[in-house]
Length: 172
Image 1 (cartoon, rainbow, N blue to C red):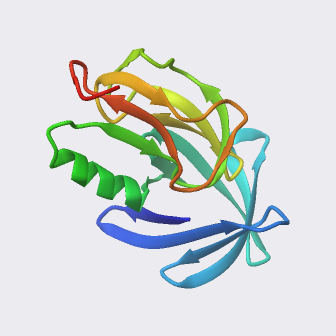
Image 2 (cartoon, rainbow, N blue to C red; image 1 turned 120 degrees about the horizontal axis):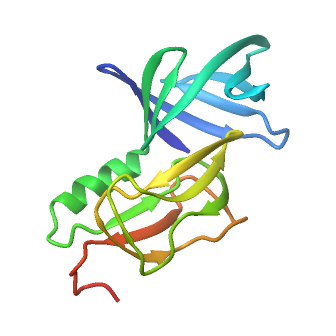
Image 3 (cartoon, one colour; image 1 turned 60 degrees about the horizontal axis):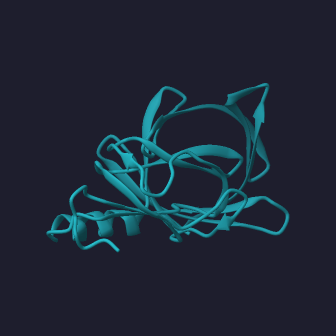
């Protein structure tokens, strides 16, 4: 799966792939690393092993793909979502389709189909890389279609749910 990781004005291309052993191969701007991570006592503290070297990291989710990692703000961006958001901004419909930014498992559904949601409201929880991530709506609207269920595994880029602006007659 491909991601963009941004800190300040710097963005790097990241490719991540989980191996059969549960460890990750992470390529940052083309340089590969073998990574394993697990929580240590608290859910916001990780023990991370990168290419055989162990360290700890404090990671706190702020929401909408924004994290504080050892005191620095980091944004994780799905390139497909970025492209979709740009395309949606150019259409009259303004429909938001959330996609998984990495492989994971749906652990909770926080809103029901037909329910009104607001921008920033959590719709479901995706467990990825041993962390639970709340996937939120980017627009105010109606949860038109929930495309996954609790316990389902997804790949990076898989569609998760669709939110349409309230009053949009194009939804079915």
